[in-house]
Length: 530
Image (cartoon, rainbow, N blue to C red; front, side, top):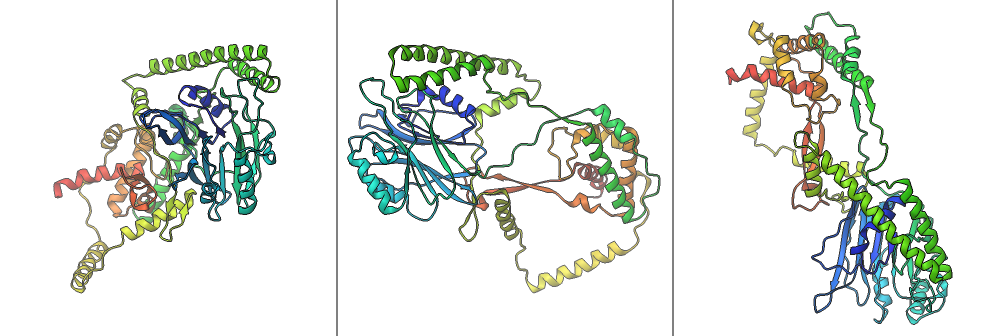
């Protein structure tokens, strides 16, 4: 969506409502009129700004791009223009890179088509939306102006398209001035459907342009649905599983027992878990306000066509009432949220983190060949390649290799010899296992098996006895289950580093909690020997 708000600071509430109701992915703004020190926020959007101030320090002009948080994107480094103002981002859509710009050409300044050509360079698909103050009947304007003629001739020469909506985008408040098309869309190398239409939702002489592309952007994976576990049903389901009585005396027995216990816990968790239904989004407006918004939209459209003073009065009255109603509704919702926050649970911590921490945007990663990758698989492959290089052992000297070979031979000889029987105090009792399980932190992230510490803490005694038999079998056979050696690797960005480079991320491995529980018990037995 593109909109010239003629000053955005006092119109964020209306923009927030339209972005929610129209499911907007990217918002392009012209004439934001913001001072660089002024902070603005729109929930669920990243904001990129290019502010301007006069020689006296007053804010004027300015452009901005707002990108929804789930879209993988990157801000563009823009060249210097002669008269045009612009800001843009790059993203991936339909399997190729797409560059999107918000542009503004101030009236009274020479129109330089070279600014447009500078943006249009290359074979990358490009979309520019903005108020260029260039009128031409070729894109729906009533009259033709010198900038409009120059833009039309340059578009024919440089092979880019200029699109305008079927309805006027600029409706002056002065009824003596005629509505016209001022806000337009420029495209090049765009080979998919694009529809431009006018919205009648926002308060400004410039009507917003809704730009719909026939494609899907590359986004981050959606968050997993929240689930609620019925622990009573969980215990009943896992106790219905027949217990295993055969001894665990070989490595194959350990593997089979570990697989059986893991699968039983996972199946019980799945059977006892229910998805928490999402009744409504936090910002969803009540039905009566939505009805009034629809009525306001119809009135604004009627006034744009008729310019009737009586309709304008009704529109102004309804707009004021709606502004008060929306502000009151969101204020009450915020008050309820604050009242629910409690220092004794995680709600107050989460609220404080949301207010003080801003999640950075997900940027594309650049591989060794200089190509940007936006999709999750491509970014994961780049990280894998980088970590393989980082964790590659340094070449060792011949002397060290010989020493390493001798020590490795001695270790293999020791491991292949029959292990002496363990003393009784080395084995794990059910009571010790229960004490250790109850001390596990319930909110730790699970490994690749999805078994949480909370699930281990809720295990009934019979299953804990079976788990203790498995742990003792591991001690007896000196064999650690292969599946427990696998981990889920996640990456965290390093603070202050360029997020476009794989070297700016550090890996963290999440191991299965059932394996970490055994390691904790084993460490307790190894400490006296260290």
